[in-house]
Amino acid sequence: MTIGKASNFVVYQNELRGGIVETLTQASNYFNQAGGAISLSTISRRGDYAKETFFKNIANVVSRRDTTSVSAATALPLTMDEIISVKLNRKFGPVDQTYDAFAKVAMDMDPGEFSMLLGGMIGKGMQVEMLNSGLRAARAALANQASVLYTVPTSGTLNTAALVSGLSKFGDASNNVVAWVMHSKQFFDLMLHQIGTSANGDIVSGVVVQGANPLTLNRPVIVTDSAALTVAGGSGSGAFTDYYCLGLTAQGIAIENSEQERLVVQEVTGLENLVVRLQGEYAYNAGVKGFKWDIANGGGINPTDTNLGTGSNWDPAKTSFKDFAGVVIKSR
Image 1 (tube, rainbow, N blue to C red):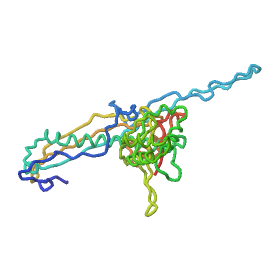
Image 2: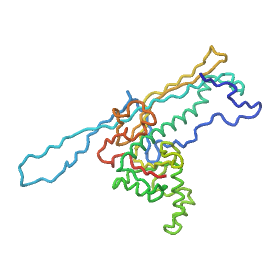
Image 3: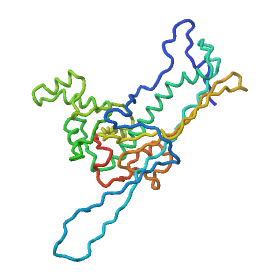
Image 4: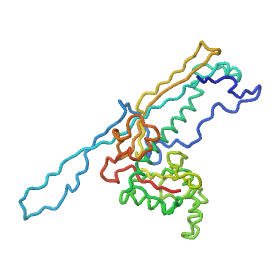
């Protein structure tokens, strides 16, 4: 058992403490923004999966009628499929700390104050983790479908032409793509490309420099340095990292708080020092528009990050790729 002690704290004798807690720095407050590309909702869900059935489109339901024939027509069946999201079970803590440690930094801590102290840190951590899981699922599902994947030629970096080519993967449904989600490397690669362009004189580069933002085909950009948007490969001098830019439709990624959060703060006695302990748990469902989690073949319940980010664990549920969560652009 690892318990924080006074020796773990930085003790200032009479100086002012500059801050209370340090939180994760990854940008994560993007739920229900940018056209609702990444949605967050709360709904109680039993079990390990959430399933929604739908009737599949009938191919060739409208066809030519031969006015010269009285032969039997071929019957067309009405079939159903389902969208499946997977439940991810999470915990925070346990965090153990001696009362003596707080006394040494002149903080009169009780269990309630202890939970408030950690609240911001835990809340930010939950938000980052949910975002990363959603992005990991969407990147895996979309990148596994050649119909919506565009790879920048010759292992190139992201540029304006790549945005156009990626968007073109959705054909006449391209207007359904409401936002881009990309790593900051891709964001700045795109900015550098546009600053250096000579198209239309200096209009493009001037706009980019003045606004400190690249032009993105009239769609907002979500920039977050999520490891879920990167895939490393090779080794040694041949090591590389691929970056994935997602062009998402509305509710392309759906995160649902599906179980009531449980939090316990208790005082622990019987040790050399009095200890206060905080521990909690929660669960949420992650889903990708147009896809179903593969329950039987490698997916399973409560998947690891590796399984969640494996493309073959997300099966297309919709017949048309235009009903998917969007498009994806791969660059270096």
